[in-house]
Length: 190
Image (tube, rainbow, N blue to C red; front, side):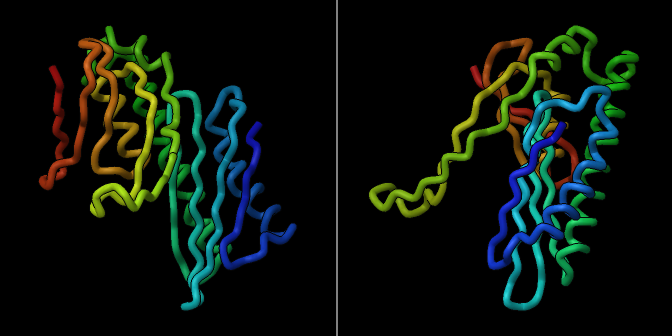
């Protein structure tokens, strides 16, 4: 069962808002055979131009679901972000089912690697005035073994342009990235 960590910026999180968020975000539970113990981190933010932004991050054992949406209405933003999360879950389930049937582009030998999981990146954001002014944030992450296809899936789920992972076949650190032509690249280290 999902737990909820809901916080507001420039807005008070009322019982009605909390109930609405929990009711809507709980829709993704239908995509699990057994709902994992996880916490949905929800950030609600309102701006002076009367727009509302909703960010949801759900670190799961094998994937990190993350979505954000901005609209003129807080409840509309919540609906949009849940729709985005549901699309991510359908995409993830489709890819996992393809792998189970052996029709994915990834060799069958890497299927076991997806069972080793993925820890969410711990976001230790720090600002250090003594460090060069171009570094404005630091993130620490734990690399888990996975195949390149799984890394691309993780990158897409997070909405990032690159993803760092430990290659399950070579045990080296690798990076997948989205190219300008919409295709993907892979950087392998020695």
